[in-house]
Length: 324
Image (tube, rainbow, N blue to C red; front, side):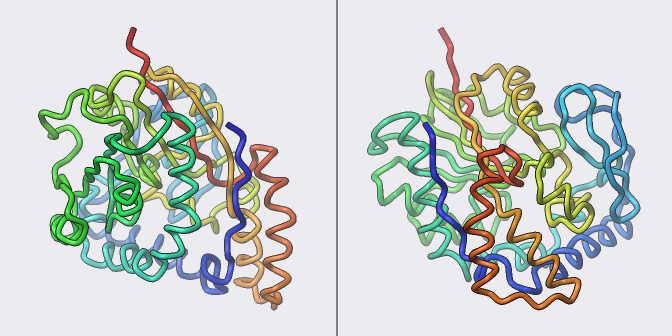
């Protein structure tokens, strides 16, 4: 299932202010937690629970380490109460507002690509059931509905869940995953886009979802790859290093270990990032003037090479349930 991933429009996705905006968000979230219930020291890797780690970097006074066993990357301190970050009204405006501005572009550029990955894995989409965890405004579910899939979403933001359900005419569950009832063997597909890196215990989280999958059903994940050019070049300036939010960053090896831990088959993995966009935005942040057309050319020419080397800062993988 080899894929050629379409280039991204940097004018839309990596404006000159991108780095500063994300550094400001990271600092703001850190201060919200520090002035709220504070931080607690994490014991062990969030994936394999090993305590054998090596120092990677420090951001917002929090050390990030890499697990020597499974190669995950994580902050040594995590919020005592994640609601210090996610229940703040500004969090919705920071991220759902961006979705509104880019919704049509995201549907065309990202949504169709993701539907193609699902179709390659499970066949025709019509009549297949899908659950989008952390669905937000539901732009991906809207595409799935157009393909005559049976659509459900999950979104903890109560008002957002109600609005999305009303606009799309589909059921949006506003409960935590562990509290969802009567959905065993219900879904052909469960998707998690830019979500698993926010989960304190990703193994327990996915294990709670596993019974909801039908046999031969799949989970599709999109998540950052810390073992990448973008992260390794920008380090603490990377938007993917956000200690209060991104509490578990994956890599190829971490994904392989993760699949074993949750008793699902790693059926597909691919790398497609925006490393060159991040790097060029960082150079602009440092004061360099770069022609927008030149930025796009450099990204278009170099990013595919980074992707094919599995060294790009975003990855997508599919886990399949095989109960015999």
